[in-house]
Length: 164
Image (cartoon, rainbow, N blue to C red):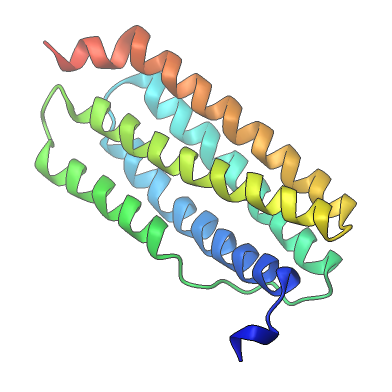
């Protein structure tokens, strides 16, 4: 019964959601790297892939801290975002705007992740899971750094190249 569910249940469900999302992102990033033409964007995707693999390991640590098995729960939001990235790769293949579209899709992923990690960190603190909160904060910090790097790349190079 839903009325029996508490914050710790919501925390666990949301942790499963981001676990699914990060694993889906690991599948999507190599395709995006291959599709990108800008070398800096390719490097950004490659770097974020390595970071995402570490994020998965941190999530698995959080599962251990709460005494739960690491298991994914289908995340419709990330499926929608990665489907849009696939559409961009198909519709803009060979276009000068492809990299701008890929970068925008990557930022949509980052913003989703930042939202989830911020929420999870806050709930972990509320639940007294300070070690978990620290792990989640570390990942949140990395996601924010990646988002800023993507913004810088977009405004300094990629968006201008899309106009050519």
